[in-house]
Structures are given as structure tokens and as C-alpha cells.
Length: 193
Image 1 (tube, rainbow, N blue to C red):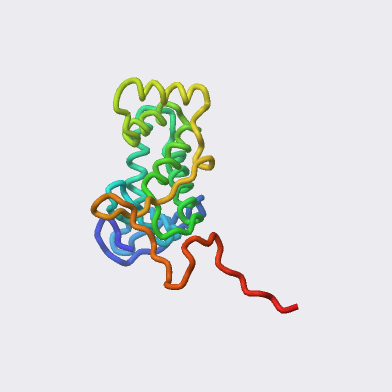
Image 2: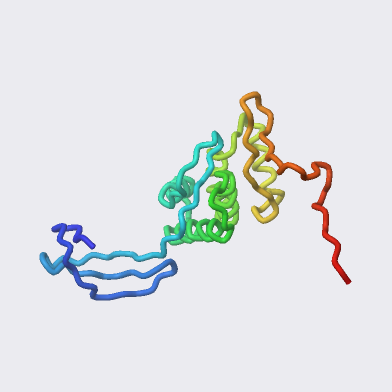
């Protein structure tokens, strides 16, 4: 670990404490004597986020946190609450077990958490994330929020769309030769009694 003051790699740990996401370590540089804090966290396997246009990029915790901070600007939501939201989103991504998730999944989970925490922050995030084309669609979203008609992420099913051919038709997976395309289930072998 490099000292942020003199860039030396020689430091000693003076204190370690468990936090919700990992370990907080207080260090002291052996060369200049300055103290600094580091956070140690478990690195989860990298999940690819599939954007609406088909691009893929690694899940970026800091990018998500920045978006949540903008939505919660001047609201009564602490940094600890935002960190907890990001940690929950990361946990849901790792529990899902998929190598790729649609960006809509990340956005919907974030909106679900914001809706429970602060309605104004929810609407701010939704106004960027969802394509409100006019004032009527925004009013409809506000009315749904007020009436409690906003579905949580648990009530929704999200999956990646099938890839499409250049003419717009969906690309269907090919079956192995000899398999019946009309059968709902594969044929079962008879069991000897």
C-alpha cells in the first residue's frame, strides 16, 4: 500500500476494524510518519452489464454510486445509506449468478431501493433512467407512485432480449439435427421394471 503523502510502499497497520462491507485499516507510513485509512473489501467476480444498445461493460460500483448521489442531491439520505444501496445491488448481482445482466436490471433495483428510501430521489433517478417523453407520462409515474402501483423488482421479470438479425427478426437458437422441433419435451426412455 502506497502512502498518499510520500508515495512510499512501507507502512504499518495501527488499527483494524470490521465494517459492513469489509475491513477498515488505519495505517502509518514508516518513512514520513503520516497516518491514512484504507478499506479492504471482497472483490466479487466481474459482472458484465449489457446496455440498451448492446454494448457490454464491467459493472462499475463508482458509476452507480455517482448516479445515486445525483438523484439524492439535497435530500435527507446519508452516504452510508447510499453505500448500503450499492452494496445491496452488488449482492443481488452476485446472487443472480449470471455473467451478464441487462442495465435495466441494475436500474430497476436502484429505483426500487430509492422508492423505499425517498420518493423525490426515486423520481429524479427515474426521470433520467426512464424515457418520459412528455409531462403526461411523468404525471402518470407520479400518480402510480402515490397510489402504490409501482411494482418492486421482485414482482418483475427481467431478461436479456434475443439477438436480432440485420432485418430485425430475432435470432433463434438452432436445434441439433434429429430433434423434433414440435415436441414440447424430449422423448423419455422407457424404464425397465
